[in-house]
Image (cartoon, rainbow, N blue to C red; front, side, top):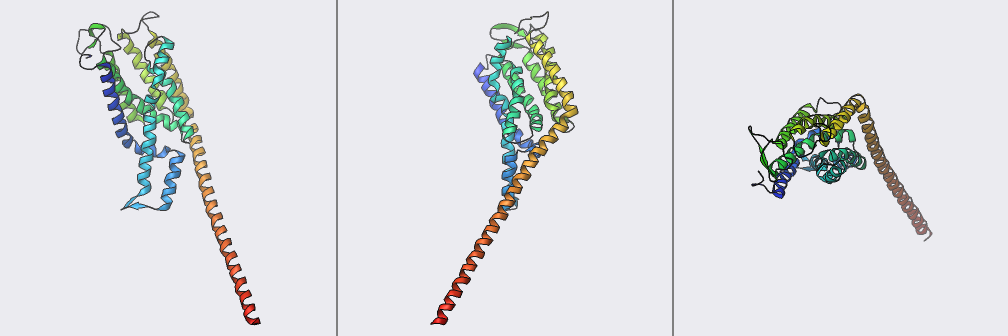
Length: 312
């Protein structure tokens, strides 16, 4: 495969595909995202809604809502790219190469941070990111497959891979993993409406960790350190346990936590709305007081002019 795709070309091609399809996917996720739009976006939409602007029969606030929702979705969809630089340092720390688990340990922290900054519900944002992560991971693993890295054990049956430094037919572990991730992605996409708040990200973590654990038995890129297990086996075991525990915790408490965040955001929206209404009332009262004052001055000026006229 490496003969047809250089390292830069393969990753460039599939990263470009991932970016384009993420933009397209953001439009399809619009209806999912609407109920968890950030406070700032809601404020802008409410402000425009009050103006009652239209382009033909289309309300302007609907156009603005689609744009803002897509922007927020793209921000969450690009998170894996934004924090991907942690892969190599994490890989060096645990003694592996570029390591996807480094990204998984950082993404949820970044999602919570961004959610707090834009005042949206981090539980709902994590549920969305859990769909975007495997979506982008499919392209990452296909890029590895065409590049020829992460080679597998010798293989003489069916499809195979070829590594430039390790000649010979090998198990296409990258393509197999891409297939696993595609199945996870389709399952999460189907399950999202049935899932309880906060369970999507832990579900992705333990599903991916479990499938990757078995796939590692066919990988030859990393040396075994404990019997037949390499470092990825250990990371997968940790990821599986953490994901499973987080899943059951969020299954029990996720809805309460999500509702608490929603109440906080809604209270902020009510507070902003109340302040705006109060400001409008104060401005009207000020305008009425100024008008009354001008009328009183005009009345006093007429009375003074009338007195002067009588004296003459």
